[in-house]
Length: 292
Image 1 (cartoon, rainbow, N blue to C red):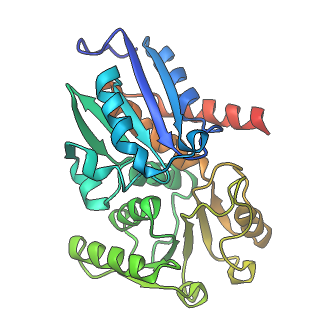
Image 2: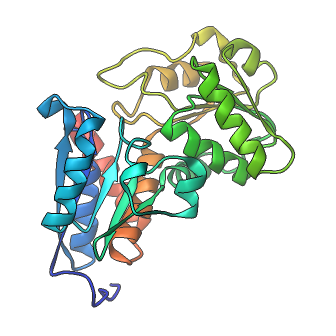
């Protein structure tokens, strides 16, 4: 067992701010790993849907975080970008990605991090270690899509095509990527069919397919057996996209990999300890099975 840093409080208070988060497995993952590490940890859901509020609630919530003494927060839809102006500092990764999913309270200073990109990469490389990275199509240029775009280019994707109905947003992200990574490897379009022509893989980073937003993020006829398909939705774990892809013979990576990977990174930020990633993944899979 890792030694607990002396500066950690006797009991850690963490939370998740987002909308429609009642089924999140993040609290259980964080609390279970904390117990295994000899820590007392309580993880509180702060669901904007329960109060009928939106991102306008963030200033008051972050003030309460400082007052009550939360050790940190996870941040999810629709707050990953709106929270940025309210923080005292950003990690280099969060600043580059323009999105925050983890906030650490460091002696009253709120510091934003992003573990979505590294979390997605952790799950992807476990499921598809030898995937062809010549040309990947990324559906979605929002907070999660931005984080994954950075991770994909760092991982070695040679040609990344962003597809989003908001072409202006996709174009802005592509330009930011091309100023950071050499070779101008990022491009954008609103036409998924054109983007997938000649692609070796597809990454889905929109909410479509979730329990509360069922369906396919693109026409199933655009899928081909030679594509690998990476999903970020994990409620349900077996989305309509993954089912259609597997039926064609595509190799797939489910959204559970990213869910666990980002939780692994957040746990380290919150506690300073290195979690057991395999234990967290096994616990996550058990929780998902129990909820079916």
